[in-house]
Image 1: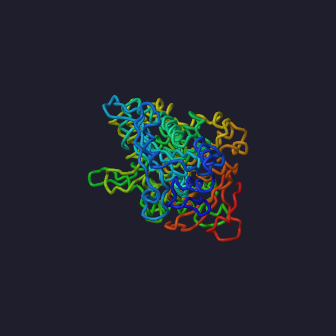
Image 2: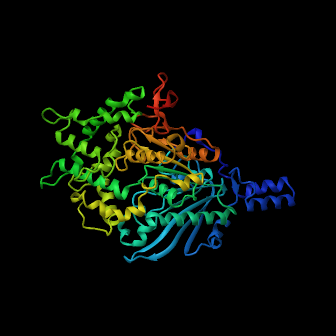
Image 3: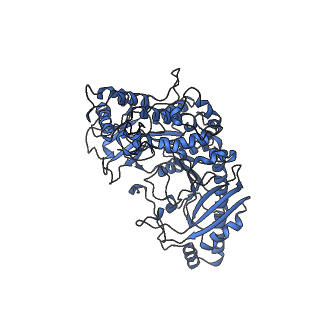
Length: 572
């Protein structure tokens, strides 16, 4: 799903690592050839990050034996150019030749009797551009992300591997997407931070072993749990990456967002209709037409505040004025109004969780039209027609809560009995090593010259965009204000977008290229051009500038409302 402006020239699919050497042999003498090869082996002339033809099938096969990584098993396989597309797609450009190294660091047996290791997958292209990209995970991790694809917050980025990046992913120290690994203390530490450290170090060592030099530039990009991992790198290992992109960063997942998920589930379950046995059916607390009614009312309140009524409320601060009470039925419930119970639940959910003393335990959610999209429902209400809920608040967040976030684990815990006065304290011990919201200075990362991008959907139903905005404002307050902070950290809010993607939004953009331009060319992103995919049922082919916070996209007053060129980034 690339943007044309972001495409990079790639070698023909038939090009191999031997082609440049053959050209040298034809055009220069033996002595000059020997010197050229020596310079390539030593990394000569790599400062411009141009493709360096080094790898081959033979070099790939030999890599495990020459890597010299302690307590690590490695398996290497070579993918010939022109035989695979990114993600195994049936159409589109083929990937260049590349070496795929699958590794297991420190294999062991945990206290629970299960086998553990820090698994990783590293793809090394023949035509390396000198760049290293670590793509983050998500959920409970436990899988190796396909390194031929892009980060989950950069759907508009053409395959970084196809562009010449060396790309790695990790399973975070355990196999399988269940959080049951929380029974093992070392697995908890691996998932919090250790696996990412070990994977980054091992990857850079393998890169040096194959190409004869370290990466010119190193990048990290992730969303959700990957956004948390991004922030963890900026704080615990600030010298590892030149550029870090944190999408929907789960900075308070084990001490805030999970509390909110329990709060929201309790509020919605309480108003849900009952089945024949008297059990609540969570998904029916609000119908799709109810959610669409609310979404339309939100837009009616604040869409025009960006200069044009077009279904996208770019000036999201204006949406704070929305009150769902304006939709409350005066009589019997119909599709054109909400019951008083529904209004009450929505108010509590969007205000955020509180304890009995009224103390806020997490930020509330922004009012945004994306709440009418399937991605919002899948997290909050689900689609189960029975009293067995399938909302991700229950299937994913409860799993993480009872196995990992509680110390010690509590496998019999009933989320509908969550005590907002006492249960948050059971999450504090793990939050201390897992959450990343507390360091709001990033002094070491800033000092080493690192760049940081935040990207967050305004209709994210699990990690509130308000939490990222709150963090960014604290960061700015500690670094001389927004203008000064934008020298190393910028935040981009995406109106209408759900969790990492989806919703009535322009949710397709190339944040990887934006970061590369910032790090390598000094071009700080005032805006990132985003588009809706042709398959979008809301705004097919629409483009918009995503603007660096606190600015938003304002209509110029003329031009097509479908074109980004008709909008300018403006302040309130």
